[in-house]
Length: 249
Image 1 (cartoon, rainbow, N blue to C red):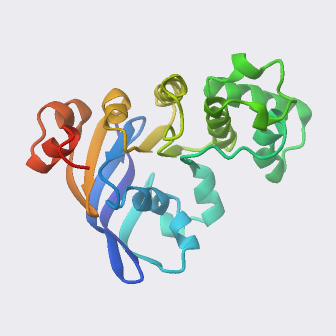
Image 2: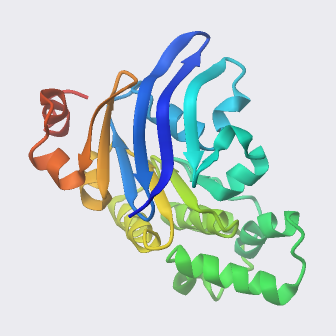
């Protein structure tokens, strides 16, 4: 695999207080890069730094660099960056529109008007999100009528319609039941072959199930990064072992 995202000497501050300290590592193409750690470890701060969502917070400052396919993200137009690096949040927030209109909203904003092309985007995005077979006969019905798990997969489809390179998942199953969680995890595994995925999760079992590699964050620092199997069976740092075995967190 080749490097897709490179992080060097990254520190993140809010009102001068460090949320992340001196992170340096690479994220490879077509892997599921899982990030685990207790609350206030900087996991979501890192995720939202990758597509500059943190810049919406006036208290936010950073030092260090992040490159996406060799491009410094600070030099990429922010709208272009957020198209290249899509994000799926913890709770599904479908637009109060039809299933179809949820997916076509972004492409229409970018000037796509051809009905056949929009129909193709809708079907492909829903197929990629493993949702097409469940909703293909009602794509003009209200998205809010879908189950929670279906709404989350619709949000994934909406991100996919923007043709990203990278998909960020911020606790994507925290509010879902086990069956819906399994469907979302299945979707992530399907997407890995075509996208780079960065997953923040408080569910260590989820990281163990789907992660290619796993990073353990603690108090804003990277404690350990390795192949997921090794993190969960033979971690190098005793703090990692204590966290993945449930002794704290």
